[in-house]
Amino acid sequence: MILSSPDPLICETIPALLQVQAERNGPATALRCKNKATGEWVSLSWLAYFQQTQQIHSHLVRLGLQPGQTVGILAPSSLSWDLMQVGALAARSIVVGLDPADPDDRINHVARLCGFSGVALQCIADLQRFNEKVRQRFKFIIVFERSEVSGEGLALADLLSIEPGAPQPDVSEAQPDDAATIIFTSGTTGEPKGIQFSHRQICLAIAAIRTALPDISSDYRLACWLPLSNMFQRIINFLAMSCGAQTWYVSSPQTLMQEIREIEPHLFIGVPRFYEKLYQGMVTQLDSASGWQRRISTWALDVGHSYQADVRRERQPGPILRLQHLVADWLVLRQLRQVMGRNLRYMVSGSAPMPGWLLENFHAMGLLVLEAYGLSENVIPNAINTPRNFRFGTVGRPLSGCELKQAADGELLVRGPGVVAHYYTCDQALRDAEGFLATGDFGSVDKDGYICLHGRKSEIIKTSTG
Image 1 (cartoon, helix red, strand yellow):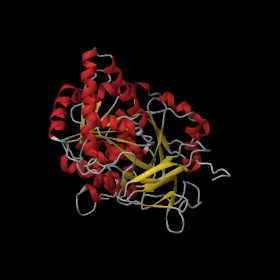
Image 2: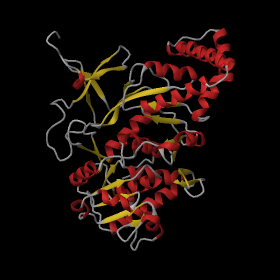
Image 3: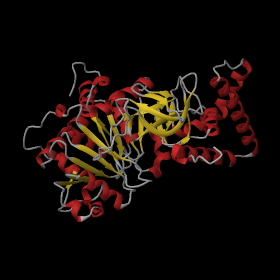
Image 4: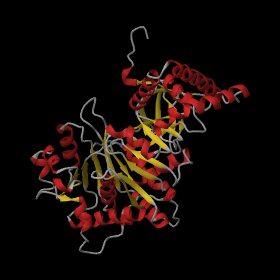
């Protein structure tokens, strides 16, 4: 559905976001990926992106997919993943991402619970990961790698080369309150639980992030490298769609650092483990330098620490420190930053806390890492630091649409339109009478509204001494 205004901020379905960008920026580049045979980057325009998802939509309907039915996607992150996802959403179906790294029993548990009407796979061999009872339900099997297709599946590329036999339906028939996706909890304390979100909820999350990070524009490049089965990466790709920014797909996590230097993203998202490994690689590089180079690097980093400490205190660095910082940046710091390309404005970290020393060490180099705080049961991130308003040791301030408060025992509670009422196929209410969901996290809010997390409630044991 597209509302009267073409502003992506007020679109209420994912296909509508794409349709707006196709109408506004048709020939501009939307997506880029590497050709496996040549190693060259190839691009897809907004108009081609829109047209190909329309075509997938039409074929899925022809193959028998009905509104409200589920489609599973079992494949690494790729341009094909997003094409399939949006085409299925346009058909008013529900997309369920499956992580190829997951064990088969989890994949089959999710498939049984959701009742897949069809699947999209990286290669036909992945079909064997589903048991016979699950496979019997499939109306179609679409495979991303044409060379891997047998008589059991259709190659996505071949599907896109076939003109539909009937007029293509309007992608905007998807409705705001249609279910768009089901994601699953980690299952560390039992079987994974499904969480269903609508198009409207996802679009509200996109709008909230855009409000918090208003600098993201059509000039931005964003890297897609985390699993698209994870909502974190999918929201970022939808954010790029909303802003008209380019999404560049990393071939594999193993080639990430090589391809990041080619992508040169303006914004990068990651998890703490990635940032720890990135920093360790930088330290190893500095340690391998000659004696005088190490001394210059140590001096430059010390200057960076002093300079950025003043920035964090909102204090103007003195003239001598400013001059030292200019020299340190020219000699050392900018070279360190270029491991992430020349365009990077800031990085975002989620999923777990980052140690303060690591945040400060990156900041000394001029690399700003902003921590965010999300919850599987709330599609809108609970809180985020922003380039203009950040505080290390906190997860930032609540986003628009999220209301957070403390319970009597210090647990954080959240309320808002992105919070689910119950788990998929389970009627047990997750929200209290006032609409608040217990996050399971202890936390506090400082006088400026920044949220500090103090640990998981499940990990705190109260002894007889208190």
